[in-house]
Amino acid sequence: MIRYFLGSIGRSFLNGVHSALVVCVLIMDTLNWLFLQPLLGRGLRWRSAVEHFVEYGFRSIPIVGLISLLVGIIMGMQSAYTLQQWGATIFIANLVGISALRELAPLMSAILITGRSGSAITAEIGTMKVSEEVDALMVMGLNPVKFLVVPKFLGMVIAVPCVTVLSMAIMIAGGFIVAVGILGIDFWAYFDQTASALVSKDLFSGMVKSVFFGLTICWVGIYRGFQVEGSAESVGKMTTSSVVTSIFTIIIVDLVWTTLFYFTE
Amino acid sequence: MMSNNNNEYVIEVENLVVQYGTKRVLDNISFKVKKGEIFVILGGSGCGKSTLLRTLVGLIRPHSGKIIMFGKDVTTMSTQEQIEVRKRIGMCFQNSALFNSMTVGENVALPLKEHTRLAESTIEIMTQIKLDLVGLGGCAHLYPSQLSGGMKKRAGIARAMALDPEIIFYDEPSSGLDPIVAAGLDHLIRKMQNTFNLTSVVVTHDLESVQIIADRVCLLHAGKIIAIGDLKEMELNTDSYLRQFFTRTPNPEENQSSSAILDSFEDM
Image (cartoon, rainbow over the protein chains, first blue to last red):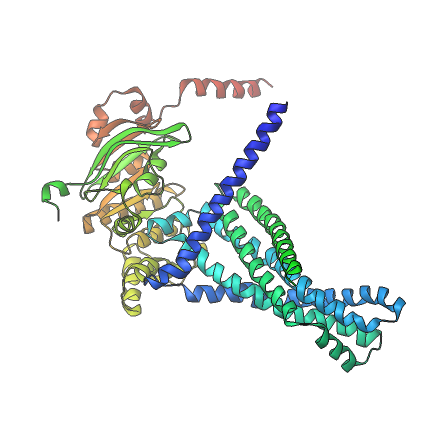
């Protein structure tokens, strides 16, 4: 019994080490084909990267925008609930502004894009593996990392920060609607309060997070996609697992950066 | 450049062993493929013939042994050398493996775009020629999902032919096709070999297409080569598995067990 228990811990640890190694190789390969090989004249698939950027970024604007607006309104009302007791409703501006920039906009955008595009990346690569398209690329002497990974990577790493900036603005606008529309705070007073509450470091920390969220979504999605073996069932399993792993890793990355920013004020 | 004498064999496989974990899938395989012939690898399901083909094209790394292609051992090559070899071979996959996100024309044009510096218009013409060759002249703008099974296989052949390879590998070309379409494909494979003096390696279990296309055959069973030679030599071979394979006789014990179940149904 004990032996079985210890054995399963050991096995899962070894599995963890193995997948970490595989991800490291994948990261090295991506960076190689992104920076080094284009310099050696092997080219980059720009058009494909732009297409992916449009798909991950531009097409996700409606849903991210709507959710950001709603989250902004919710945050405005929730903070009004407490601040009203002290007659300090003007500080809704600080609360909504800071939490949107430093935390909620990057996180919400990343989670939405994971659900929308992280899963799609896994499903696409997984399906290509099942239908031997990845093998076909390799037999043609074409590198799958160059063809499949790098364009998705570029698209994602640029798309997530762009969408995040938009989400920040819309979230703050959501707070505006509550403060100005419902609580009757003067428009310019609220605007000035927001402007004075936010410093550039808030924006910076949010942007740094969003870049790393983009990296996470992309690499987890691709890693899970290449893990697909054999059947269509495996594609489904790995797609689910891709979303779960990705959101989990995003929260971990968020925690790490929040801690770093907290202790380096 | 190599002498003519060496050129006679384009693929030489020596003592090839492939393992998945501790399970030996291919056990000490050796054979040679002559230039310009159609070499058929025959075998039942799960005998390792697809594994053998995937090892030949470099998708699976062998445990030990040599695969000499164009006079060089591909198993010990650098990645760059491997790419050079891959430009000289083409492969048709069992399910054609066309890129579903691209049109048929783009599929065929892809290797040309990536491996040559030809102008866009030249690539377009060459793509059209390759598609005409397999009888899909008017299908360049269609997506793979709009094609029938046989047309997909033909498009797969056109793509494999894009860079004018010297060796072409076919993985189960006639599987999943009706007899008429399958026969058409057999003739296409023959025509390709005659017209371009192409060396072809075909993996199949379809005995009828073997009769049409095969110059030489090797029969694989449980990871080992049982027999190798042309069709006449196969006729004369007395190995029991080979005779069973060529006469399409079921295994006796399987026959019994399945009939026992059927009998019990009949009793009810």
